[in-house]
Every structure is written in structure tokens, then in C-alpha cells.
Image 1: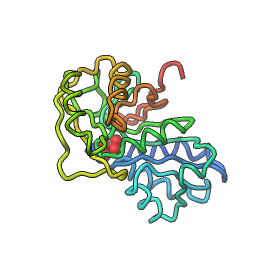
Image 2: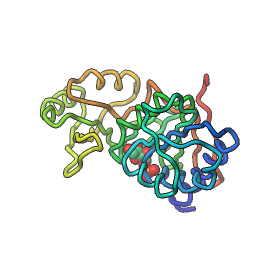
Image 3: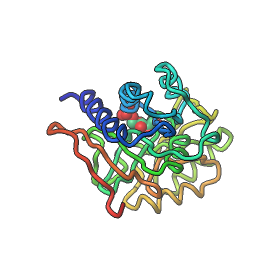
Image 4: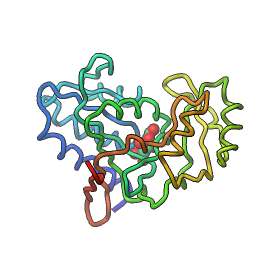
Amino acid sequence: MTQDELKQAVARAAVDYIAPRLDSRSIVGVGTGSTANYFIDYLAEYQSDFDGAVASSEATAERLKSHGIPVYDLNAVGEIEFYVDGADETNERLELIKGGGGALTREKIVAAVAKTFICIADESKKVDILGDFPLPVEVIPMARSHVGREIVKLGGDPVYREGFTTDNGNIIIDIHNLDISRPIVMEEKLNNVVGIVTNGLFARRPADLLLLGTSDGVRTIERKGV
Ligand code: 5RP
């Protein structure tokens, strides 16, 4: 199977998982990226079974709306039952690197609110130790140089993502060669750098369920302790 077919398979599996658990009041949190896009397309088949969605990016909001799915402001909804999103890397504990598409801040907010976070990813995303994929951080533009120097102190190599502005009007720095052997510790260190809005480590709030697309089918991996 191609990587694209694996993404389609996990998106379909996520819809199969949540559809029987939705009711007319349910709000679904929806992530960003190519895997999330497949999820949106399949979710649209069930749009009469739930109320609407909260989007993690403008692009996702547009795709949801193009299918006629109502998109709510997060502040207008009480509770989000499920958040479904892709990832750039996941480890065994379902700690993630996200933000390859630059939507990490809104993704982290929706994930924080959701009762259940379902990560959908093809098997190329599964790693033993996070960090081969450069870790994105969203940064207030005036803090770019300061944040770059702080990243170097943490042992990483900061690379400014040229020509990219987030939905929140900020920039992205991708951190190469960072030691992420202790994801929660690194997430907290980066949270403490003034000027970083959000870092792409989802370790303090990891996924609850991983649907991993493999050539042998979709594997369902529950986070231990959930
Ligand atoms: C966007 C993300 C995406 O979930 C991540 O980049 C994976 O994308 P794709 O599904 O296209 O492989 O974090 O900010």
C-alpha cells in the first residue's frame, strides 16, 4: 500500500470508530493535514449524525464547510467528545511531534479540550525516540532571534521556516537535532522560553488512541493507563 492509501485507511478507521458514538449534540474536533483531510471527507458521510465541528486551522474550517459541516468557534461549544488529527511522529507512549503543517497551536488547544484524542497516522510516523522530524515551534515574530539563541542553549539547531505565517500571524522555527529522549521535560523547557507561543511536542497531553496504518491493516493502540 502507498503512504496515501495508509492515510485513507486510518482516516476511515477513525470515522468507523467515532460514528457509532456520536449523537445530535456531538462536536468533533478536527485536525489539520493530509490525513485529517481524508478524515473530513469520510466524516461528511455522517454529518446528519452530529452537530458540527471545531477546526484546528483555517484550511480545515474551509474543507469542513465545503462539505456543509457546521464549524463552531471553540468558545461557543461546551465539550468536544473526540479530537482526530494526524502527527509527524509518534512514540510507543503516544507522545507526538506535530506542526509540520504549522497548525500546532490551535491543534494543541483543541486537543487540550477534547475528552478523547485520536491520532491517525501511517506507520512511517512511528518511532522509538522522537526527534528525527524537526520539532516546530510557533514564535512571536519580534522574538525570533531571542528564541533562536535559547534553542541553541537547549542543544537544538533552529531553522526559520521561510515564507510561512501561521493562522495566528506568527512564524515557525523548526528545531533540528534536538534530544527529545524525555519529551515531557523538553516540552516544559520550551514552554518556558519567552516568545514561543507553542511547541509541537504533545507529551503532557498525548493521544489517547493511535490508529496506525500498516501494510497488514490498521493497528489500534491505546495509551497505557487510559
Ligand atoms: C499539522 C500537523 C499534521 O498533523 C502533521 O503535519 C501530519 O500531516 P500529514 O497528515 O499531512 O502527514 O501537525 O500541523
